[in-house]
Amino acid sequence: MWKKLLTVTVVLNVIVSLMIAWFMEEWSHTAQGKLPSKTAVILHAVNNNLVTVDADIEPPGFLLSASKKSEERELIREDTTIPLDSDYTLPVRIYHYADLEHAPVILYFHGGAFLEGYGSIDTHDNIVRALAEKTEAVVVSPGYRVAPDHVFPTAVNDSYQSLKWVYENAEKWGGNPEKIAVAGDSAGGNLAAVTALKSRDLHGPEIIAQLLYYPLTTFKDVKLESRTAYDSGYYLLSRQVMLKARNAYTPKEDMWNNPYTSPLEADTLDGLPPAMIMTAQYDPLRDEGELYAEKLHEAGVPVQAVRYNGVMHGFVSFFEVMKSGEMALNESELFLDKAAADEIVYDDEFSLTVQKVPAGMQRVREEAEAFAIAAFLVGKRTLTTLIP
Image (cartoon, rainbow, N blue to C red; front, top):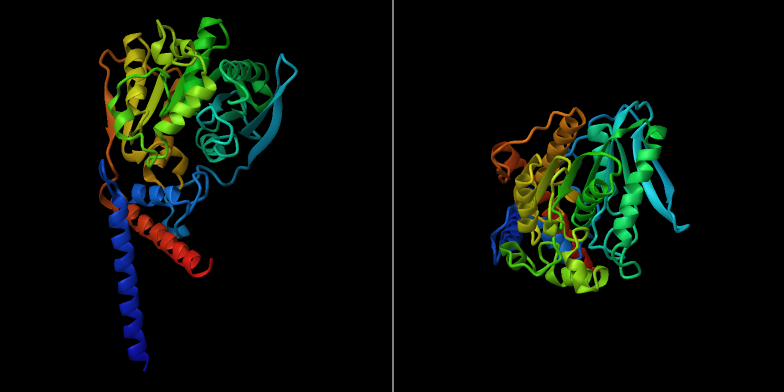
């Protein structure tokens, strides 16, 4: 009897495994080519509302690739406010260790298309926390005001005021006001770049580095391959959302040429801090981010441009389960450490580094994690179907 039961169990397991593998293969095929399994599984989950973009998608614990730099020291989180000239206060979140002295400071602007409901200090909390853990810096994330209630230049002004506030208050948390870096993703990457520009123009606090994850760099209608190829929304950013953001945040066309909305259109980028710009292969913002890197280099600014293949817009937010996201954070740590030590030098030749899809044992691990997540998703959808 037990032999028959064992045989049935094995057969069922094989059937289920083949079914999951078939689903993964189906999810991997797109009009733009075949996606890596991990990317395909996560995109399927988000696009079919099986999870939200900011949800914790985790395979079994023994498969998790993310690691923390230190679990012995307690990372402190503080939520406070930044007073503005208009008697309005911005919410701000700060991560730091208790024993810091003269530590670098990272001012991080969250993404979210400049629109209410698309991003906040809460949706990007994992990135901010991870940067604090990895770099041992004081990381400050302000909740700047967004459209449609607040159009340009409100978010820019909030961001610059946040920079000045950080400069004046960094020492309270063990930070060094002379070693402030700006960082951000997507719309936040735009604000980080713009804050560096504005601080240069107004002779504001010195910024030692700018870390830009897949930044939006121009609101103008420019013909770029990535904007056309990956604008469907399947890769987590659609043309529809980009147009909605532009109409809400920059309702007047003359705003699109302003360097404080479109840093790619700035007359000069001379004198800006060293930059690291990371882009994603399957991202409508890929080309403009890389063009901005080239323009920075032409202006004499040290810049590291890195494209991650096999991933989509927002991939760093999934660093707990995507090896590429974890690698991007590790590269960010190295860049920021060098910037704080004033060790970044200008290279006469501009180059775009392409990080390939994980291979070898890393690829095996990614496939195993993708299978585990896919099994969870298939099981969740099955239960949802059986139990409405």
